[in-house]
Length: 268
View 1 (cartoon, rainbow, N blue to C red):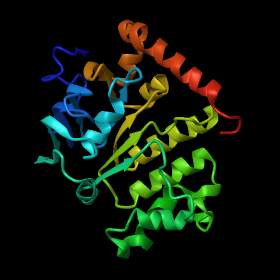
View 2: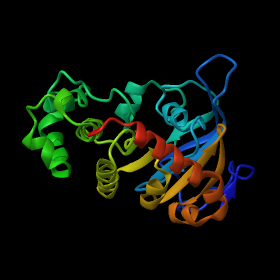
View 3: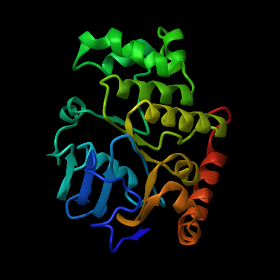
């Protein structure tokens, strides 16, 4: 187990060898002079599923966006497969093999499922037939309903389309920003099962989640962020059993999820 004091040099439970994606001492924010992240660190090794949990406002989504070039990194670095990609444009990162699924507004509702997936491959349209076949192997439902407009889908189905679109460029790393947010418990379980399935197909994944316990159950390793900095890291199961993590974070996060579930419209 590591704490914030040692996080810059140690990543508990990480496999040996160089990481596929890493963030080192990342400081980032949205407004001039206001930093949301105060020196975050993260490693993702090939084939790993890495979770990021923490209380609301901890900087989880900001870290994910900093990795994907959507938030300016003011100091520190982001490295992909040995190359410094700090503040590189998102479209360039897609070509390099990073996929990103935002939490909200993550499909084109007026387009069909097939057209949404075509948008995911706009940089390489000639590969559509092969990539669509690969995606349908993972998500058979999308092949059966390819002509259906995304706007008519349920929240869980839209999330599936968004994940599939991000996979169309055959990324080596997939960044997921709270994929279970706003979904019913059943749809949440489906999303986590789907995430693990994608990971087992060979895609490294970084997942930001408010459903902390479920996230820790499926991930290989996880980071706990608090006030824009690393608080704990370790294997997912180890963090679930760590009394301090349970006391400080898991109870609070469970309450946040329960409140969100209570506020969700029926059938969402």
